Image (cartoon, rainbow, N blue to C red; front, top):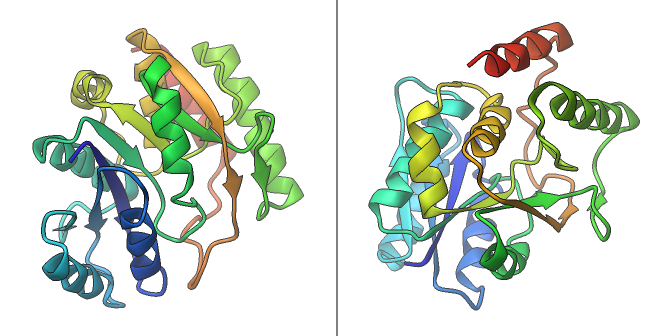
Amino acid sequence: MEIMAMVPTYNEAGNIRQLITAILALPLDAGVLVVDDNSPDGTARIVSELAESEPNRVALLLRTENRGRGRAGIEGFKKALAMGAQFVVEMDGDMSHAPRFITEFRRAIENADVVIGSRYVDGGKDESRTFMRRAVSSFARKYLAFVLGVNVQDPTSGFRMFRREALEKILPCLTARDPFIVTEVLFHLKKNGFKIAECPIEFMPRGAGASKLKPSTLFKYLLRVWKLKLL
């Protein structure tokens, strides 16, 4: 399998079948690895059913310990590489990341090591964010550029494609257990000199269910970015 879409999930039973079906329909040599944190809504059961009908293209990694977005991502990356993927796509399971953009990522990564799906480059759109969330994204972009030298337009995007070699290099450095892993990954890509490209995407309102994003203190985020700088 050339491309593996790695999808961390928690309570995405209302979206995961549609997402997997859309990815498998792409004109690509692509599969799906769902990393589920033991969702009580039956997400894993749905994925298991799909894996029975598409055993070579759909896989489930069910986690019952050390749960959290960061750890799920790290374990998912490792599993995707172990399955032989040459390119790994990281994306959300709530349909906010449209699978059709994976085709564009595959083209763009010919000239890069990592492709970020960006809401803020020319052609990108964000159909779900409030003014406050847009302001936070803008601040994060400027802050990361100032502190870490990471100059990308959408540093908080969780929709990305990685070359195998890039992931193999940075995986031993990743430690975040929560969504801060998105920033941690960018830092280590920059530190190791990997080329990052951005591809416009349309970020859509999530499908069924409720968002897992919880308000966090800005002060805590700022401190963690500075800790990265000191590494």
